[in-house]
Structures are given as C-alpha cells and as structure tokens.
Image (cartoon, rainbow, N blue to C red):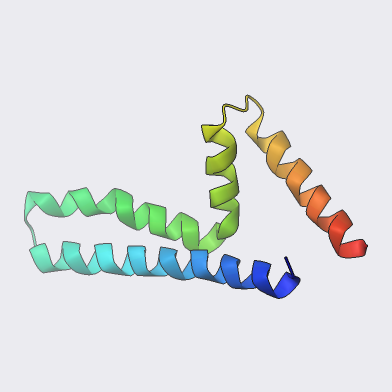
Length: 88
C-alpha cells in the first residue's frame, strides 16, 4: 500500500465524519425544539471525532473489537511499524 492510498483513506474517514456531523446537526435543526433532536447529539460527537482523528478511529475500534487490553499500546505499535515501513 502506497502512502497516497493511506492519505486517501484517512481523508475518506475525515470526510465521513464531516458528513455525519453535518447531517446530524442539520437533522436536529430540522426537528426544531422536538425532544427527538437530542438523539442526533451522539452522532454529531462521533462525526467530530472522525473529523479530527480520521483513520486512527478505525484502528482503535479494530483493536478494541479484538479484545486488546492495551489499546493505546497497539495503536502506538502500529504507528511505529508504519514509520519503519516509510523509512525502508
């Protein structure tokens, strides 16, 4: 996988976050003061996380789903491995 592919996937995750955040905010505004509008708040927060962290969110979710007790260590190890591949 080339660097260009990794950058494209990261941008795709960030774009998905922007769409999720923007869409949920628009839907909440469309409902006005209805109590159902609060249901869109978690989606907007998830969109913000995706916009700021991009593909790293997918890595964290994958590590969590596989039952890693030390998710932060797994993410750090993947970053180191990716950095070593870049140097080769």
